[in-house]
Image (cartoon, rainbow, N blue to C red; front, side):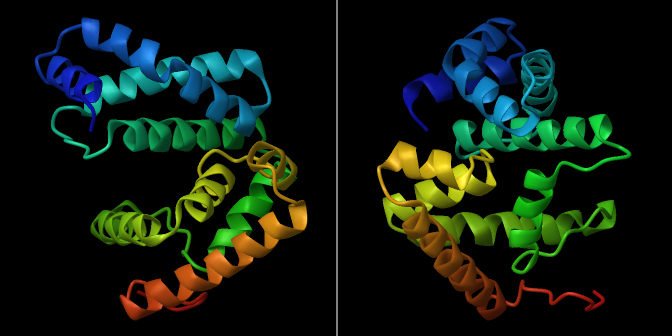
Length: 193
């Protein structure tokens, strides 16, 4: 966590409203980008970005994230997906469903709040897995599954071919599946826990 993140976290813990201003200055662009990539709508993106600031405000304390950037990105992504589900109750967004189904092979979807301890363990194991990846692979994985970038956007952003991007994502999901299985976190589809 760099000095600015420490300052923001300290201000959040002391309930200073200046924390929201600094949070907006530092992470507003990231929040807008992630939410717009998920929602494709500026108005909804702005709403989710503001909701993100409030969720960070309401969760720090008691939460003490190691990486404020990752914490904010996770919140905005989850709120964006919630908003997308709300907006598309009767019709699901094909691209987002495709992303979730790609990861479903590795990480089971759970809506059960009783599984929060398992989810915390999964988060920790996933963070460790991501830390072991080389920088380019980690960027590709995070851009795809956390920021919801398309294969074409990732390829253009990192100056690699779409085929290469797809191949890296396939290999990384395979490694993740094995890693989770080795850590006994992996739950096969249909398995009851």
